[in-house]
Amino acid sequence: MSGFIIGLTGGVAAGKTEVTRRFQALGVHVADADVTARRVVEPGQPALSRIVARFGPGVLLPDGTLDRRKLRELVFADADARRALEAITHPAIRAALEAECRTAPGPYAIAAVPLLTEAGGRAAYPWVDRILLVDTPVELQRERLMRRDGVSRELAERMIAAQAPREARMAIADDVIVNDGHPDHLETAVAALDAKYRALAACHPL
Image (cartoon, helix red, strand yellow):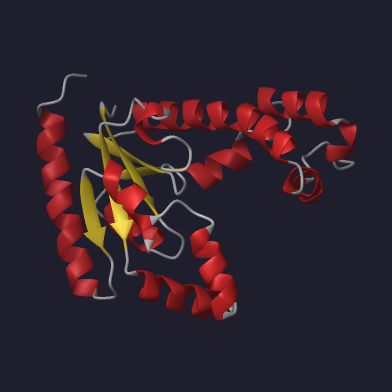
C-alpha cells in the first residue's frame, strides 16, 4: 500500500510516457489519468449516468457506451457545456486516481496527470505529496509534435499554446526532469528520483 504519491505532469510531447515507462521498469505503480478518464464513464459508473442526465440519451451509442465523438461536438463550441462536463468527470477521475495510488503496492506510487496544472494544481490534488514535471525546450516540443502527429508547425504551436505556459508548470513543480533527447540523462534522472522518493516514502506517515 502506497502512502506516498507523486503527481507527474508535463506539456504535450514532453516525454511523459517515456519517463513513466522507466519508473514502471523500476517496479513503481503508475496510475494514468487518461486511462482513468475512460474508465469512469463506462456503463454502470455514476459519472456516465450524470452525463446522460445533463446532456441527454443522445450521447450514448446503441450498446450503452458513451459516444465520445458526439459529446466532443456538444462541448467543443459551448464553454458552459464543457465546464458542466468537467464538473462531472474531474472529481470522479481524481477520486479514482487517488484510490488506485493508495492501494498500489510499493512504497510510493505515481499519478500521471498531463493537465495537472490546468486542472488546479495542488488545490485540485491535495493528496499528492510531490509534483514531478517532465520538461522539454519548446523548440524540441514543437519538433516532436510535428514528427509524432504529422502536424504543421502552426498547428503544433497552437497545441502548445492551448496548454498552461511552461512557467506555470515550473511554478508548481517540486522536481523537474529535463527530457531534451538524451536517453542516458533520462535514465540517470529517473534512477536518482526513484531513490529519493523511496527514501522520502520511508519517512512518510501512512
